[in-house]
Image (cartoon, rainbow, N blue to C red):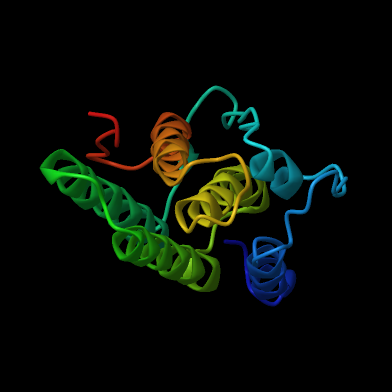
Amino acid sequence: MADMEKNSWIPGLFLAMTWLYAPGALAADDHAAHSHESHAAHGEPQALSLNNGKKWITDEPLRRGMGNIRDAIERHRHVTHAGKPTAAQYTTLAKNIHAEAGYIFQNCKLDKKADEALHVILADVLSSAAAIEGRQKGVSRERGVARVAGALDRYGRSFDHSGWEPANK
C-alpha cells in the first residue's frame, strides 16, 4: 500500500473493517455509508478499474498474502471434497484469511490508485470471511468461501501477479 506516513489511515481502516464485521455489527437495515465495505457486506462486488487498460503492479507482500489466501481456499476445497467441513474448520479458514489481510494492510506498499483498487477486493475478502465465520445472516459459510474465491479471481484479472492461478480452477 502507499507510503505508510502518507497513508497512516490504513491500520485504522483494517481495525474499522474488523469491527464492522464483528458479531452483531451487520444488523438488518443497517444503512452503512456508501462505501466499499458496505457493498462488500451486502454481497455486491465492486467494479474494478485497470491502470489505463493494464493490470496494477503488485509488490512481494501483496503477492504473498493473496497467494496464502488462495492456498487456504484451495485447502478448504479439499476438506469439502472429503465431507462436510466443521464449524472449527470454517473458523480456522476465516482466521487465516484475516491474518493474511492484516499482513497485506501492514506490509504492502502500492501507489494510491492501485491501493484503492486493492481495497475494493480486500473489503470483499473481509466481508466474505465474516460469512465464513457464520456472522452474516442469510449468507452460508460455503457462500462466503465462494465469495472469497470470486474476489481472488477479480484480483488475478486486475493485478499483475506473475503465475497467478484462479481459486476456482
